[in-house]
Length: 487
Image (cartoon, rainbow, N blue to C red):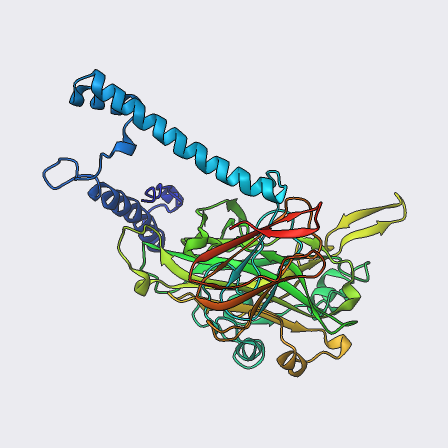
């Protein structure tokens, strides 16, 4: 069971003298107190019966110490005989553990592998072709990402409508004050500094740098008007940025953050940063990513990984997308998601980034001439629901002649929209593996036939069926230039 949320007072009511009562703040404080008390009572009910005694099953063999277990066995069985039995059991357990270790060691020895944590990871949610990236650290999800996202999570037609004809937010955040909370907005149509909005260039002057050479993806989750839930969180995953290459006409991945960075900010950004907040990592079994619980006047504002844009002149279009839904805060608590009102959006900030400095003859990271950061834009404010939904910012570079009509016929590869359970699933293992590198994937739905291929190293052309939630793992042996299936 989850730990009850700690109560931390946000509002200092001494700042409201006399009859100047902040009723909204009082409600918010009471809601936080109620959430903490209700979660504590829910946890307590799983441990304590109505008569004050412990519930059956609370105390188990695993919850007592090894010394106490040994004493109980000895006292219950008459001493020496019980001790001998316990010793025999311990020996058997040790032998079983040793056998398991030996079996894994034999597998590794057969493949000539050491213990290496390098891993590429793909979740097979649908049939199609999955090219596994040459990732050497962390976990990389290709296709729909972590968890079972249905085929209709991402829809390019809907996204373009959200950017052009259906811009208005589905629901307004509490105390909304900014245009980006009310509708979709495009700030810069390309990383070229002269594409910054005219109002910004008028107010703050032209940038001395021709190109923005740094990009940072972000998301916002806020409590919306009418929220009554106290046991609901917003789950967010797969914050992904891709750009369309003007030279090749192909989409390239700029950043993918399966579990985005999470921060809390004080609305309306005065003061700004308020700490790491209440973000919680979610296991892959629960869909992966992170979950948040924004409570006004705090909002959740997080990021992907900022990167240098090495070829800004080649960005014909840019896409930022993510997936989100509602989940229970305490899995053993009440399900009040029907009363939840949270809105989310995502976007991309451009910065001048590393620019050549003639005085020092080095590259120096530069910001805009004001404290205001210019964004490529923001997606539509959408209402989180129990089902996975997608959010996306889609911006064509008009200076290069790119249009939404072009992006409709050549959309970003959000996911592979084909029917699960067919025989057309192919996994392409990483093209440039290193010794001991692992490639692991899991099927969310049953797949009749999976074909494994590799561009250079031999893989043996495996073809097999997968049940739901079945995991397969390969490891690479450099000496033989071969991938071995070990799971």
